[in-house]
Length: 182
Ligand SMILES: Cc1cc2nc3c(=O)[nH]c(=O)nc-3n(C[C@H](O)[C@H](O)[C@H](O)COP(=O)(O)O)c2cc1C
Image 1 (tube, protein in one colour):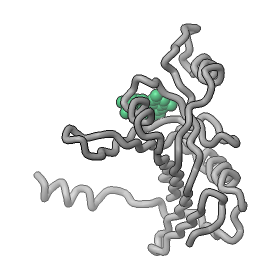
Image 2 (spheres, helix red, strand yellow; image 1 turned 30 degrees about the vertical axis):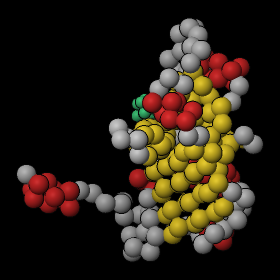
Image 3 (cartoon, helix red, strand yellow; image 1 turned 90 degrees about the vertical axis):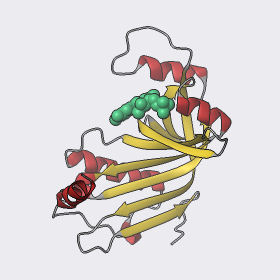
């Protein structure tokens, strides 16, 4: 099984042939602006749920050691508070964020060979903003949910990654102020 499966994985499709280029010197200076540009391009390329991302949080393993966990979420906004997402405070990630308010986001747009990483500290936004988010969900039914929480991740680092079929992938890394870090 493992050898067959290993060979099967090798046969799976790689990046599409026509990936866009990326020149960091010509990119918007503001990381949020560059992100919005890439999001628009992912949408134009037909990406389903281009605003979906993986959120990694840190909890504890059964022996008390650090244990990362991750799951997909939907981006709700970007403003001075940070990059917004919402979930239940009682969920695993909600409990982990209460204990350890740091997280890492990862967006991936396979059709464009692009990945964006954003990591930082996480703060809870207001109950009023959380209620608005709850009621604006696509399948909202008018009920309230006092456990629903809107969070904002305040970035400490960013990485914009553009894959290339010649293997010369471009990594554009920025600090919290949007200054390139190499
Ligand atoms: C594309 C996608 C988007 C999702 N968006 C959200 C979301 O915005 N908020 C949320 O609480 N769960 C969302 N989920 C479900 C989460 O991935 C996860 O299963 C759930 O929140 C429980 O996670 P936890 O047990 O790790 O806390 C989404 C799942 C997928 C596949």
